[in-house]
Length: 420
Image (cartoon, rainbow, N blue to C red; front, side, top):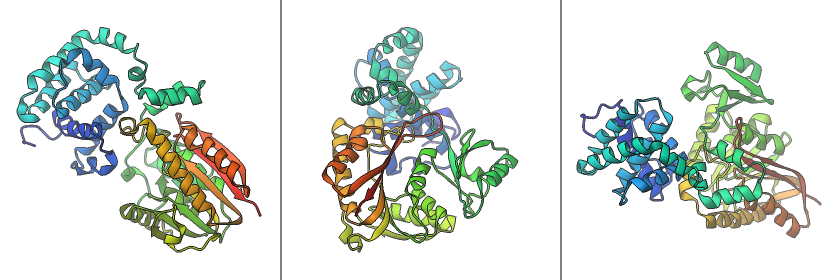
């Protein structure tokens, strides 16, 4: 990018954000690392625009439809979406945002669309009230979710779907898990307050911060006193609660938050699996920071023989299976653009295969916690009910569906026991 765009300007942030949004709209996940390629000083501003724009799924396109005769170059389309997000959420003077978006357009596609960006955004400002009134009639656009996604929520949660949608469209809370081997919630909260940060204790190990902060501001983070983990995600280790000395498997373990929580609770012989070598290194790095150890293997959880274990080898298994991530969409807003209705069925088939294979690795009397970060019943209660119906030696001990809200994301847990 030319130095003509000051690095700390809104124009520079819009210029960098637009191609990332365009890549997501073309089918690329944010997990592929586009944001990590942005220089650290500029990354927070760019990430704010990218995440905010993607959360507003459908709204921008609905607003642009009457203002554009033809769909422009993808990066310009994405730039317009980013500018509309900024106009809706910040207190900048509207014409300043327009001018900065035009400046950004000058560095995209040889500057050929500067006039179009200027005209579209100024027309939007003139017609804003009328356009927003029309938008309110479009349920999918006004709720920032794909129509099929809304239909699933409305069917499954007729009384709660609007709250789920509202939570999914909001910035996520930031919760901490105190490493009980090195501190406790009361002592760590005092350290937070001494550092000028406020929070509230939740349960034995959780603290919900009053506002999110970079981990660099958390006292003792590097030394392993604390980890960032959603309050709902902390429930997994609490439910499984293996006895000290147990042989434990954490399947699909990356990036290692639940693995570490299990080890913080008790001295265990734990094996952590993940398919991705890069993510396995994340597990190892997290354990090293916290002063914990486990046997980390890069392997497919649905193929026990491939990772060197005989049948019925573990006292406890955490099956944190791949899913639609519909319960954590505010942390992964690209999911609303990337997921399709058929994907839920594909995930359900993968979940079934993993659950059945892991069951063979569980000792009689042992417990398996089936976990997802989804709110779709096909991946959760329906999946567990079908498993119970075809597995005579399985008993359901506990079932919890956490819906996303102010304090936590959405998770499902089904605690199963293998009866003799």
